[in-house]
Image 1: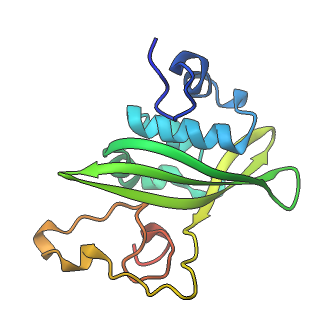
Image 2 (image 1 turned 45 degrees about the vertical axis):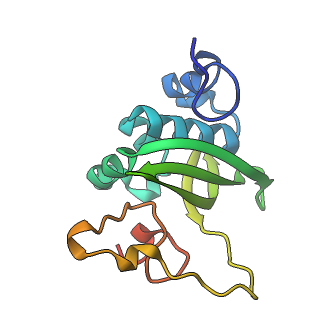
Length: 170
């Protein structure tokens, strides 16, 4: 048995594999978030697409989703979980780490999940606000040449909006 990549310290077979085999067994937004991260690690594109809320029309974006999954995922840290405005909404703030060449990057997001017909779905997410006194950092991707520029659909948008690239300039 191997430890689950979601960071729960449980074995994969007792953790995210249960969700991967049956989406209906997901009982909380955090469990769905962790299972979606593990699906990224294992390249389970179908699971990631299935767990998007139907309003997201994820199937139409299959190629972009598959590309974003094809990364060297290095770890997950769940920062906070909160209830939403009703029992069928919840939020999970997390940091997902990935390697690109010799550098490690971190994507931090506050994801929103909704439960519909008994199933939890990912619907959207926001990037945490920078502190008011903090000067905005210049995105290091802007210093790359066009030929080497690579942006994933789940990366923060380079325009500085703090939205995901796919929901902004993508």
